[in-house]
Length: 122
Image (cartoon, rainbow, N blue to C red; front, side, top):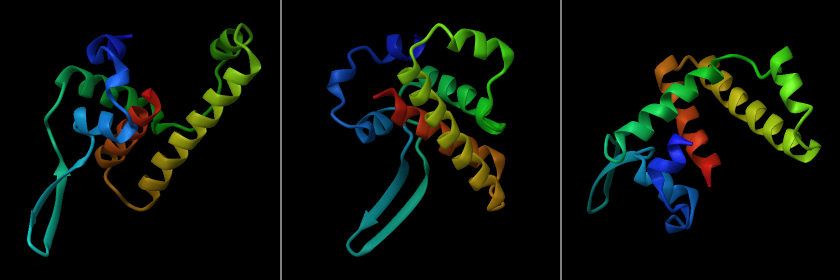
């Protein structure tokens, strides 16, 4: 809800890439002539929303599973919605685990997951 409130009208973003650029989930770039140097993630955009996405991304450090509480909640939702959420959680967790297995720093993996979560908003 905080993300929706902070962003306002989502129709102003035609693609997920535009939203990620607005929230500073894209690498910086320094280009001149033939030279193209990619830098770290930019710090521009809504700081509050960016922090919320990072906090949410830390929850995906663990394998995708359903707790007893979540199983009770899912009984109240339609099956197609359950399938979409399950696949999204598994994909994001797999991306995080794959990044960690390649000996990347956990904070870098968190940024990648936050970027994926941003893509899910649209």
